[in-house]
Image (cartoon, rainbow, N blue to C red):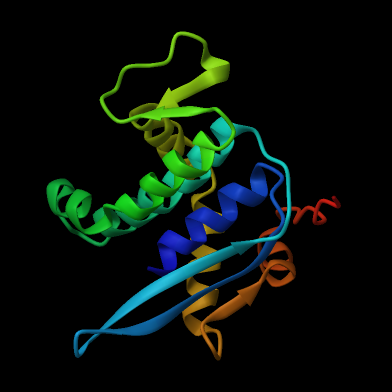
Amino acid sequence: IAYQEAGHAAIGMTYGMSLGRLRVHTVDRDGYMGWTGTTTWNNCYVACFHLAVELAAGEAAAKRHLISSGHPVDVADCLAASPHDRDMAIAALARSNYTVTLDGTEPEAPATGTSWARAMTAADQVVNEAWEQITAIAEALIAAPRRELSGAQVAELTGIHNARPATA
């Protein structure tokens, strides 16, 4: 989970988004303890395709971490799958009249949408480029007293600029 949230944070900040905080925490689901995480953004402006890639970057980072930890690719694919991020991309970008398709077909005009497969391919690339920063964020997040980091802490740790929140 820490690598997933770190992927969101590093790639979002790289795209000029304003990180509020990220955290991992336990949840109780039907009597079973599990882990989840959240990455919170301040008001900011970002290109629609970049938002899709930022949301895909969590899954891409988690998958890379699992593979590097020795899991077979098919197992890493299953364990890292993040349909909630995909669904968030589809819903959030639809409000901006930007379509994210699931079947791989691309909208005719790139400015009007993309496929989730294309967003994932781009996420794999940018996660590979930012792997050192993603790893630093994940390790710091795990070690943090409340498993929480602010945008300022992430910026200081990685050297990635944390944009100022947008004003209305």
